[in-house]
Length: 333
Image (cartoon, rainbow, N blue to C red; front, side, top):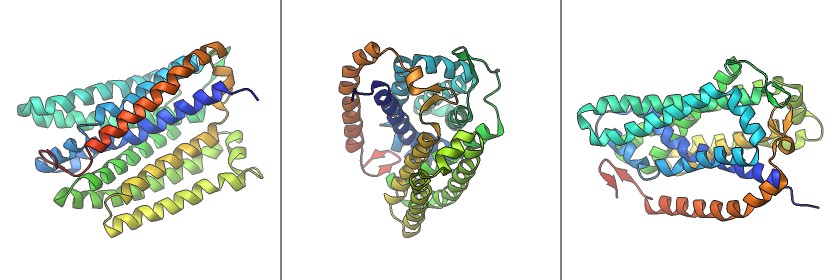
């Protein structure tokens, strides 16, 4: 049986998206939580906890977008044509947020302004990413291999629901990250925030999960048709188990368990997304194999992927190892 290159590259892009969401998600979450943290030591400690890793986390966004262009150029053109507005909003928000992150320290006289910019950029980026995901999940109108919809087709109640859900999820990641990385009053505050955000995230995930099968008959069949329902039913069961462990860890005052369980919730969410979308990269009509670049192009890119992905994983893991431990308002200790 020949090696399925399109499926391999689809897996790599899905992995890059998951890596971006779980890594950049918590530092976006820290920005979302900024208004709930007192000015001074707590905000400084929160931002110091992500300072060494936040820009490296966005490597995965570049890899996901660049990989989609290189491996699935047809899908790249369709998705960008359909979702220009939220994607451009996301990119501008990330740029603005990055500028605010740096200038917050270099321009202390205007620090309140940069804090607002940091929070605003984080919120807009999270909402835009969720709206983009929701719009892709509800389907893109395609005719003659080009986008055939309107400018605002992405703006629907379902896409807004997914946007708000991702905003809650990122805030949960941010709060559990700070539980893991902080001490004292900041950690106690984040325990309380994490508990409330966990409830909001689970409710939002349930709402999205309940609405998704009704978007298309194909989604309903993938989740509930026999016998694959025996497999797909494991996802909500695992979500329930992870949710229990998450709240148990928060109640017991664990430092690491809440963050790991929040990551697990995002992993299960991506698994659910994969069940709904497979085998389409642009639902409901363009499959992974339809959108793939020519076989020779994929074959040419394969050695580069096999070399670069382990390198990125290695330096990412090393950076997290170097900056392990708790963070104070003046840095790591």
